[in-house]
Length: 59
Image 1 (cartoon, rainbow, N blue to C red):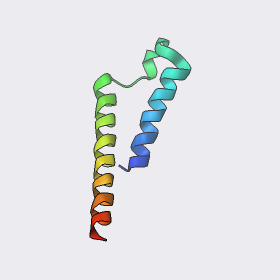
Image 2: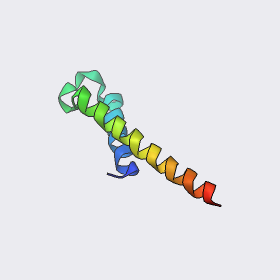
Image 3: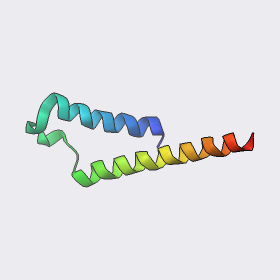
Image 4: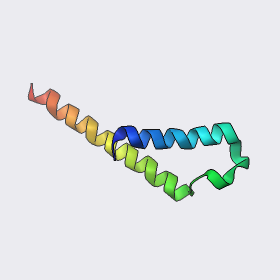
């Protein structure tokens, strides 16, 4: 899963909350699913930053 796809999934969840509010609970993922997606996105982002850091330190 790419950083962009994880970010898109999280934004989709946020849009659901914003547009439908908490009254539309049927379309929301389980809290642990949402948390796992967020954690996965953060891990992907951290790894991307680590790669950039390595590249910058090689120059």
